Each structure stands twice: as C-alpha cells, then as structure tokens.
Image (cartoon, rainbow over all chains, first blue to last red):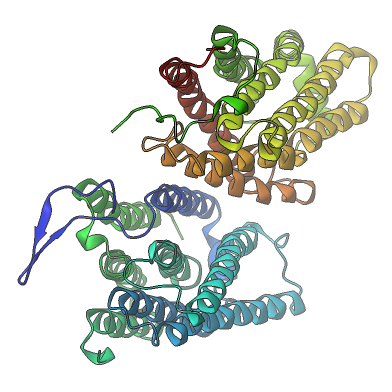
Length: 202
Length: 89
Length: 259
C-alpha cells in the first residue's frame, strides 16, 4: 500500500484512497527525468534563439511523417501497457501476456523506425556534427531512444514473467512501476516530436 | 472486459486523433506559423495531461503529486512558446 | 512500530565486530562527505572557475591565456582540492560500515562501495594535479601543452565515472534491501542514486564533441551529470549520519556488549 495514501477520493461507486501506482521510489526517478528533459527542451530553445534560420532549414529535412507515425506507435504502446495493468487489477491473468507483448513489440517498432531515420540521415551525410540543430536532434532523440530500449527490455521481461502468471491484483508493484516509466517515455516523445519536427519558424 | 468500453481506450483514440491533427493538419502550409505552433503545443500539452492522468493514473494520486504533474505540461508548453515568440526569423 | 529494528531484524551478535564500535569516529567519517563537497564546490568549482568549465572549444592560445590570467586562484583551488579529495574516501568507509549492518560483515556490495568511493579520489586528485601543473608552469609551456593538460584533466575526471557509478549502485542496492519499517536511507535518496547513475553514461561523448549539450561544459555532461552527483552526496550523508545514531540505539537496546 502506498505510504503516500491520504485523503480518499470519492467516486460514484466507492471511496478509493489516493495512491501512487507501483513503487513510490520510481516516482522520484520519473520526476527527476521529466525535470531534466524540461531543462533540455529549454536549452534547445535557447540554442534555437541564436540561429533560427539554420534550425528551420535543418528541421525541414526531417521526416515528419515518420515522426508522426512514431508518436502513434508509442501512444498505442502505452495503451497496451495500461490495459495490461488493468488486467492485473482484475486478476485477468490470461490477458496480460498479449498486452505486455503488444507494448514490447510496439517499442521495438519505434526502435526500428528511429534506426531507419538515423540511417537515412547518415546516408545524406548528416551527422550530429553537421550543425547545432542536428547536434540537438541526435542528442535528444538518442537519449530518448535509450529510454525506449531500456523500457522495451523491461516490458519484455514483464511479458515473460506474465506467461507464468506472476502478476495479479496483489502482485503488481513491479509492472505498475515499469508501466509508469513507459508512459513517461511516451509523453516525452509527445513533446519532442513537435519540438524538433513541427516547430515552424515565424 | 470489452476494450472498447475502457476509459484508456477512449483516451487513446482521442490522442491518436489529436496526433493526426497536429502532424498532418496544422502542419499544412496554408496555416500561419503562429496558429500552427501555438495550436500544436497547446494540443501537445493536452495530450501530455491525458497521458499523465489516465495512462499514468495520476488522477488518483496524492494531491501534491497530481498538482506537480499537471503543472509540468503547462510550464513546458509556456516555456517553449515563450521562446518561440522571442525568436526572430 | 519501532523506529529502530527489533532484534529479529537487525544484525545478530555474530554480525557485529567483537571489538567496541567507535560510533563517534564513525560519525566523524560520515561528516567528511559534506566537507568534501563543500571543499570541492568552493575550491574546484568557484575559485578555480569550473562552474561552468572553460569551454572545450577553446583554442590552445585561449586556454594558455585562461591559465595565465587565473594562475594564482587555480593554484590555490587545485592544490587544496587535491588534498581534500581524500575526504571522499573517508566518507565512503563510513557508508560501507552502515551497509555491512544490512548486508552482513564483509559483504561484496559494501566492499564495492568502499573501493568505488576510494578509487573515485584518484581521477579527482590526478585531474587537479594536471590543472595545478598547467597553472604553475604556464610561463614555461607552449599553448599546445597547456591545451593538452587541460583536456587530459577533463578526460580523466569525466570518463572515470563508472568507478563512482558502481559505488552509487552498491549503495542503492543495499539500502533498498533494508528490512526496517523505517529504512535507514529513504527510497527518495536511493532512487536519486539511480538517477545519478543513469546521468553519467552520456558523459562518454565528451571526447567527440566540443560544443553543445554533450560537451564537457554542456548542459548534459556538466550541469546535469555533476549536479545530480552534487545532490546525492549531502542527501545520502544526512541519512548516513542519522543511521549511525540509530544503529547505536539498536545496539544498546539489544544489549550488545560492544555497543
């Protein structure tokens, strides 16, 4: 039970205590990561302020369609994982594996999509050293991609354990923690995509 | 459990629609940059808010955590738009 | 609910040294952590002008001029900092002993922590010595040599991060396993350790970039990587110092002869 439970939340059918999903400590990591990324977004905007023309010209070479598809992939991944956690709460142990696998597979799809995008850029002779925009582009998407790789590994681990019926309403702290981390990875991309790909100059 | 009746499914559908609006709608050249950028980031903030409240389940979190979490998309969007307006062509 | 572990949970008599435990010395060693940070921050950071560092994109002439201009402050800052870096070692000994109370005497993770903390002193000291030398000898060396000494210090102090990472990981793992109802080190500090651990990896990029967020003066490789660590040291120290007091109380309540 979360040690941060305080005032109950009144809902239509019953009173639920306020709680944080998963292990409390993971929220320190999620909070820190989101603040760090906010700082990075700000640094990016500061760098853009100094050379908007280069940033705009470089932005236009990015593959917006692939980026949009990446957003849809991660949103779907989060949805699948959220459904998996709901299944655990309801002790629907048979449903869990396919939903967790769905999360892992979509994570893998994101990784493949990003790799294709990176290789397209390298083929065009564009690297992090090309200019400030591309330094930021590769750094931000690269660090995000590391988060995706880590998260997908965790989801794969959860999938394997769920095949043995490890998780149910009483045993879901670890999957809930992983799920919360995965939703963070999703929401960071929701900001990163427009920041890098869609932000037209004045 | 019918997936279609789940709240998270409706949230997912809304997020997908909003993504299409920003990626393939607001990005069209006939829309002015100001409208496109402000619209895109306001929508992004709304999307983040729903991921936070309904996927991360922070709707039922202790109030201080929920407040901090809801503040994040607002602060981030405001900061980004603030810089955008301060940046010349 | 006990604020200290009842005899069933805390270490049985065989896990505690048969010799008297010197709680006072233990606490003094724990305090050397904050002392280290204060010294490092003020001497290396402020006096020697490393917050933020002089840019990696600087030319040899610019680096030479920087050392010529700041010769005395850098010499003072680096020499004293080099000496006081030893406090990071003494601090890690105190932490290891608290960890042993959870892991058992001679546990591998407490050993890893102590070694990690001790070896961390090496890149700190050598880097300070390199920069001290650059300042000391600036009127005898070419700009190219000054530039080399500058980079050598940064490459060493930054890329040796994994020794510290292992120290941090060992701390987080052991304190996570604390079975006390009120842990000796709270979850927030444990997880901040993991945030710090994660933030170090990207620093490996510094040899390859001289501008931008990953450069050794950049927002990621400097501001985030250093400040997560700067925050970990005092927050962990606070709870280690308190833990020693709690362990003393546990020992006394359990009637242990050596307490």
